[in-house]
Amino acid sequence: MAFQLPQYHAPDFSLPQFQSVPEAIFLPAPMDGVAPENYHATTIFPEYFHVRGQWLLAQESRMDCVAVLKDGRIEAVEFRSLKAGDLVAAGRTEDGSEGIYVHPDGFLRTDGLAETFSFRQGRSRETAYSVDYDRIYELLRHEKEHGHILWVMGPACAFDADSRAAFAALVRGGYVHGLLAGNALATHDLEAGYLHTALGQDIYTQESRPNGHYHHIDTINAVRSAGSIPAFIDSGAVKDGIIYECVKKGVPFVLAGSIRDDGPLPEVYADVYAAQDAMREQVRKATTVICMASTLHTIATGNMTPSYRVVDGAVRPLYFYSVDVSEFAVNKLRDRGSLAVKTIVTNVQDFVVQVSKGVNAQ
Image 1 (cartoon, rainbow, N blue to C red):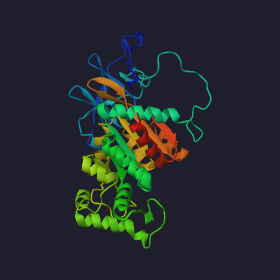
Image 2 (image 1 turned 90 degrees about the horizontal axis):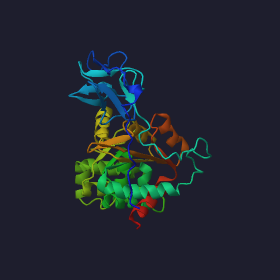
Image 3 (image 1 turned 45 degrees about the vertical axis):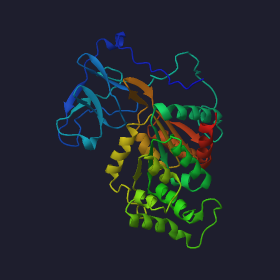
Image 4 (image 1 turned 60 degrees about the horizontal axis):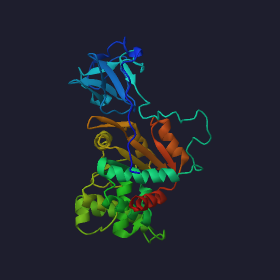
């Protein structure tokens, strides 16, 4: 059976509870970067605003922004991007009583099969993930042609020869439309192609090389000498790997800097807000996000990712996965408000290999 997106059930605004509600209040921002009193903070869920007799859906959102009315549309805007005079929605209720309605149940099943109580509803090392893998294979095959697949990766994905090769195959196969990472993922992936090590260890045998602790900074230095990652790759110094395939296939990648970075590589964003803007540009396109072994980048991405996407006027779910060997890491994301995330507790290197094999199996 072919993959099918679940149907979105919009609120029924003809119900009596919505007939006498007021229109949403919009107040001007008093100065750049400052919201008015009683501003409404956005969530990951579809939100509707009662404006001139109509309920306007925010076409895209993220948590902890403000809702701004611009040219008859609702836009989610970061506080730092507010301009004096921007019309900001005010109200702290979400049930429509102040003209603002948050709709978290638009994709829930309506067949009455959900149970009130059942065992093992949490996600842990004991969870059976077989069905999750099968659904991911189906989802990625669908999204390859009909969506935008964004991956968020920590350096562990490049530490193993098989997982590195498996993700490179996913890029070649068209299952990667964007990549978010840090300096470390790109550095160690390029180190693997340049010197066959990651942090000085052979990526296959895990044997430490003499002076191996120089290898990652030698790689950074070589890339900086070439002027850019694409120039380094074009020189022939690296002939395979994750970043190699992204460059060759034209897949955009955003490398967000960290206070602990070595080097860093030329493409790494040193300005945290420039990095956030570049990440959000990719997130705005995403219909599926898969985060692996990077708590920092996963939570950052989760904070700017809604639970839905509007495509050609239709509301569809935005699928969000967090994969990590640590239960703490995947649960921390949910604790930070990304309630729509599906968590998988497993070794990310094994996960990448299995997914790469699975999407190509018929």
